[in-house]
Length: 273
Image (cartoon, rainbow, N blue to C red):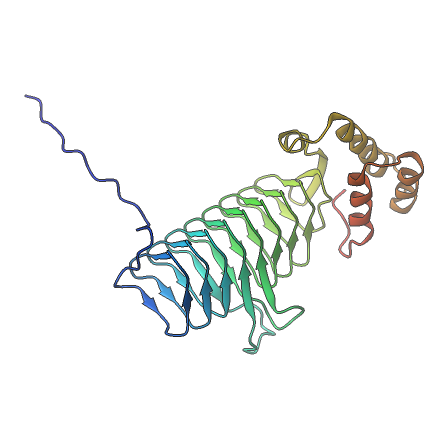
């Protein structure tokens, strides 16, 4: 005998444009047009949420925090917690989040410490997978992907279109350049230059991020010139200062080479080699 199964209703974390009655929203929070807030979520004082942003169930957002439009926060993400910094003494700091970002389950983002600009900043169009942690004073650009469990220490800067693999940990005050890729399970303690691939504990460079560059439409000629610059800087056994000088003498353009050299020259922690 065959039993007919009833079609189950698809359960969604979001109820578009609606605020669940169990959500707790501070009277001084600013909720813009068509924002949805799921069951048991908490929106604190000083939180400003842009149009059409979706907040799932059991999400906590503490202020001060500025959140842009069309962002999505999945269940159990926690935004705006106090910085894990022993020097922090309760000064007013904030988080600033741009538009069209996605924060998956259990993502944690801490607001800034009293050091520097007093802002933790997330740009636009970023995708942070489950259990990603963004510590205080980090600055993320645009179109960044961080895979499950990737962790940032404080004061880290990640530039546009970078990818950080799952379960990777990046040490405080480190920079990840544009279009760079950090492989999974890496421990990064020095800057990763733009356009490069780094992996390992401690992370080392393994050439250009060729797949990523091709996906983003970089011309073959540009990739070839970046390969030449890579060989001079990292494989010639020259000192870094001498290698940079040689690249400038032998390679005239494109702009990506100039950006690579500028990134390396302003590194304070040193670069992965």
